[in-house]
Every structure is written in C-alpha cells, then in structure tokens.
Amino acid sequence: MVASTLVGMLCAHLLCFSGMFLLISRRLPGNRMGMDVFAVGNLLLAAAYILQLVEGGPAWSAMSVVNHCLTLAAPIAYVLGAMRFFGHQVRLWRPLIVFCVAYGVAQWWVQAQSGSEARYAMLAASATLLFFAMTVTVLYGGRTFAKDLFGEMIFFALLIGGICVLNALKFLKIVDGGLDALHMDSRFQMIFYIYMSTLATIVPPSIVWLVLRRLTDSLRNMAARDPLTDLFNRRGLSEALTQYFNGRNAAPAYLLELDVDHFKRINDSHGHQAGDEVIRHVANLLRATVRRSDLTGRFGGEEFVAIILEADVAEVMQLAERLRASVESQPINVAGVDEPLRCTVTIGVSSRFHGAQGLDEALRQADSALYTGKAAGRNRVELATAPNGLPVADIELAGAHP
Image 1: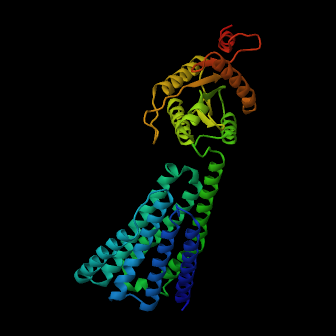
Image 2: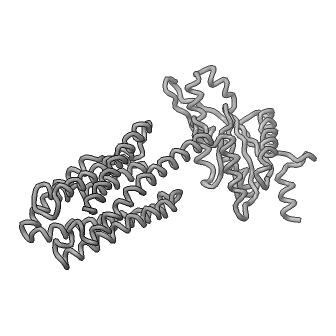
Image 3: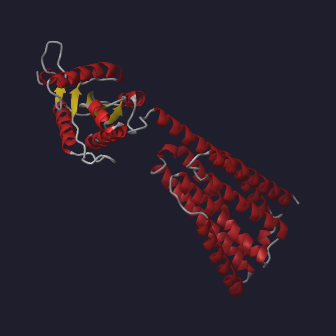
C-alpha cells in the first residue's frame, strides 16, 4: 500500500511538471531549449509507472512490454531534450519509435528463450548501461561544452549516477533472487521509489533553473553586443576589459579605432542596405585579423574598436596595417548592386594603457590619431603622439631600453 502511494505521488509529480514544461516551452520563442522534449520524457515515465500500478506486479503481457519500452524511452527523451538544450536540432519521435519497436521485439525474443526473469533482468541491465552512459556524458560536458554550467553538471551527474547504481543493484537482485525482488512492497523497491520520487521533485526545478540561467546569459550577451555585427558595444567592451585586467599578470593593452572612409557617400549612393553590408564586412575582417584573445567592438555608425592584448607597439602596428590592407583589397558583394563595392578604413592607434580606467584616455588618443590620419588623406594607420610631439612608439621603446 505504501509503495503504491509513493508511485502514485511520483506519477502526479511527473504529470504536473510535464504540464509546466509544456507551458514554459510555449513561452520560449524560437529555441525552446528542449523543454517540450523534457515534457515528453516526463509523460513517458509517468505512463510507465501508471502501467506498473495497473499491472500490480511482474507479469508477461502486452501491458508489461509497453511498460518496459516506456521506462527506457523516457531517459532517451531526456537525452534528446538535453541535446536540444545545447543547440543540437535532433528529432524526437522517430528515435523513440524505432527504439520502442526494437526493444519490444527484443522482449518477445528474451521471454521466449529465457522467461520473465531474464526479461526483467534485461530491463535493469539496459537501464544501468543507459544511465551510466548519461552520467559519463554529463561529466564530460561539464569539462568541455558546458563549462559555464560545471557545478550544475556535477549535480546532475550525481543524481543520474544514483539511478545507475540502483538499477545495477536491481539487476543483481533479480539474478540472485528472481522476480520476488521486484515485489512493490519489498525493502529495495521502497528505497527505489523513494529515490525516484525525490528525483521527480528535485530535477524539474533544476531544469527550469538551467533554462533561466541560459536566458539570463543570453539577455546579458544581447545587452553587451551590437545587433548588426555581434561585436561588443561600449558596455560589453568595458566589462570584458575589466575582466581581463582583473586577472593575474595582465599585460598592458593598445586600442585601435577604425573608421570607414567616405561611409556617408556609400549610403547616399547605394542605400542603407549596402551600408549595412559594408559594416558587416569590415566587422568580419576585424574579427578575422585580430587574435582570439583580443577584444573587438562597434560603437555605432562606421566606427570600430579593437583592443590588442599582450603585444608590443610594433606588433600592434603590423596588425593594424594588415587590417587596413585587407579591407582595401577585398571587394564587397551587395544584393542589387551590379559591381562589387570597395572601401577603405583609417585607423588610429593609442599608446599602451594598464587598466580598465585607462579606456577613455586610450579612446581619446586613438580618436585624435584617427583624425590626423583622415586629414593626411585617409586609408592609413596613424599612431598617437605624446604631448611633446614625439611618436608614442619612440617613447615606449626608449622606456623599454634605457
């Protein structure tokens, strides 16, 4: 009686959270983060436990075959939901249907060859292997593709590992004691149902937490990015720079300010769509030219910024010249424009600065150098000058070699 109550409560939990997952998925535009698939997983597991209640105990029947298929199909659905959460657009129903048909056939064959005891042992062994693979995958994910969720992944690995251990113990008990080990009111089954009921209470809110975490991170990223180019905006660049300088042994940085030459003429002659294509083209070249550790941003209009980290002034000037030459040499294909467009950029380079608080001064220096380059004819790289009129490179090199 107690076991039946526990299983009934477990079914109620699963069905309620399934409905909640479906409601959440409908509120998520575009990417549903697997919430609809997690809802299906809950429904499958609830249906399996409902069939177990109706069945009453181990038996050979069509209901028992369906029960076993659903019991294993549920965690497979959770795996598919997790894959969608991490951005993999996998199918849902075809894998589940193929699995259920294949496992159903396997049950008929094992039943005919070795009887019910072997069929229930196969279920426990299959669940053990499945949950072991899930545990290993979650641990691997915490070290690779889900490093930002390392703590949460360890938590899930522990919970899934618990199910793995219980199913392994169930397999051993069936092999040792036969089907009597599966009696609903046995001590082991009571422990199993209590653990599953605890999971049904803990896991769904944890999944909701992961979705909220991802949504928050996405909103934070959107607030820090320029929507046209996906480069940092000023806020995002400042935050990234602060994070860099807060690290140990952070080296000085240089700032490059780029401005597309005669950009208004491009807009006036070819339209704003062509102007947007030019902006995206320059942004892509900027990303491709700087190193992975460097920071890139767009501050509106045709102005771009790059912060070069851990480099000396000679390397910075070489990078800036390489970027200028790349923009000049590569044509831009624009829909509706017969001939590819070409553009140039003028780049101003600041002196080195040693902290996030130096960003404003670096911007001022680079802006001054940029307008010096504009006045000198555009399509060039200009290094900031010190108040005494000497090039910053000369002063920095002199300071490095007394």
